[in-house]
Image (cartoon, rainbow, N blue to C red; front, side):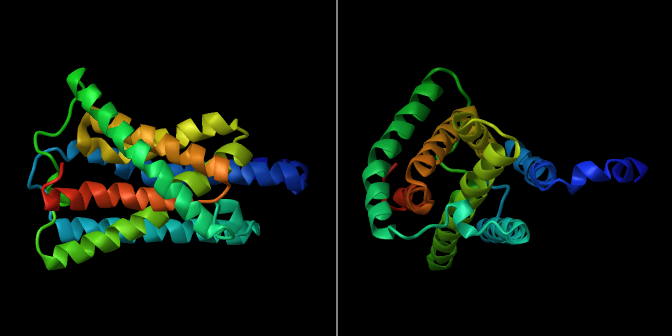
Length: 239
């Protein structure tokens, strides 16, 4: 406390205080999400999780973190557009999302296949137990999960983290994009190292597209399509 009081003049400076607060804020935020995401590496045995409960937990977590981010933005008076919530050219962004998704989807699939052949680990089953969707009830829950994850996770990992990495920690855009992709990939340890690297590649692509377009619309749509394909295509016998 004495240290903070003795440094009162430094904290009175709007610029320095803003950067300091933002740096502390992102450190606290990472401390909040990274430990639970790292636990995903220990979920490797099929049948360990119940899909509805896991889906509900994920939805609640994502909404809670998004609400926390909205609070940060409101507190700092930054506005939702600072997170990429800019829907001015929504139709155009949707078109870009569809056009870019196709090559990204197939490239990511080829990358994961190549990594597996190179000896990177992967689950023994095509999908983890909690991504196995059977029955109308689970299909509805899965669809809600995909929608929430697309909006919330792009807000979290692209909108918020890129904003703080670039403006708070003063990182270059490419470095910020790579770092956000690394953090994003940590939550997919159950997919093995091949899956983690592939998810990191997808996350980096989303980050670069967001930086290029200046809007989260395209990454959100692409994220939705990616998750939708991974969960629902197997139901149609497409792997």
